[in-house]
Length: 253
Image (spheres, rainbow, N blue to C red):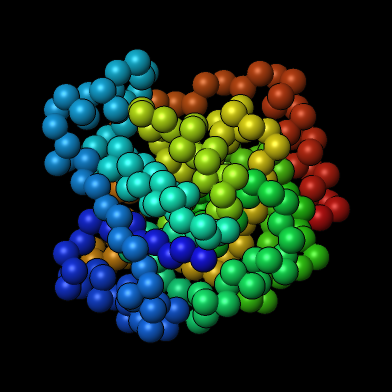
């Protein structure tokens, strides 16, 4: 399984030292491929084409750099023969020690449906509290796995730790194309291929915005400074379907 780290840090930065000091990572640093594109370093022409043209709400330089970094890693994965890739951002914190060289074996045992993204963290964050789905019978490192209901995928965010297979990787490349979208907004991907599957569990955590500056998410800091348009109002029937389904999932899951 290919291992990737999304980072724009210098090799010996404190941020990377903190990342690789964790037991899940410190013995396998050489197994990671590093990808990081700084949006502010792109030319004005490239930024305008990729992030502004034909958009109601342009991407910030950080959002564009984040998307391009992840997509570069995914393209590298597809150029290999590996079945899965695990991708981390450099502000990840482990919840428990994980042997990443055994992770592929455990993923095989889960027998997830083809065309999947398994989020290894984020579902526990406040922004994702509306996510609903069904728990799988299996667990991963003793943690529950939620198969996310597609009507609630719009409430799943964060791309700081996840596993994808080759089908999902190809779909992500196709979906984002030459003008990437906000990378951790997964729901619109279903319009490209409604047969894919999203799962979530909680093995890796992410710093809150009140945490130390060394571990803060650069992207979230940037987003706080930018006005984000309100979501469009939902159609009434779609709203009622989701409301009823949420009640049923809460009651019986």
